[in-house]
Length: 140
Image (cartoon, rainbow, N blue to C red; front, side, top):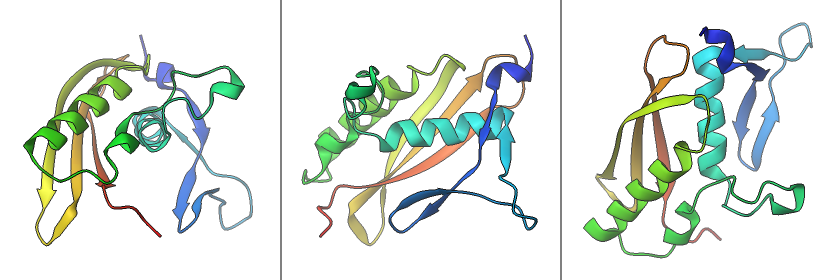
């Protein structure tokens, strides 16, 4: 197995209202591959509500983290966030093994948690570490 199994994709940049394609100074679209592509794919999967893409025939894609919006930041909610993140990440066939999923509160931000995910990709290579911030606050 090789890192090529992690594939390549268009690089995205996060904006206030979502994502956009990243272009180079010359105007061509940037491509990412290997572990960077896997990390980007995991973040996109976490940000997508499970069932949101069912009209495209992929109803199981996404996470259930959105169900925690409006909940109190307590141990039970953080455990649910850990479980939902684990369930979501395990759906990606490029993940050989989930090494760890940890959820931490953020000092001074009672409605936010940070989800730390470490995975071992297929094809070997370095472990992929992701920090995903999640707000349980209803945004206006």
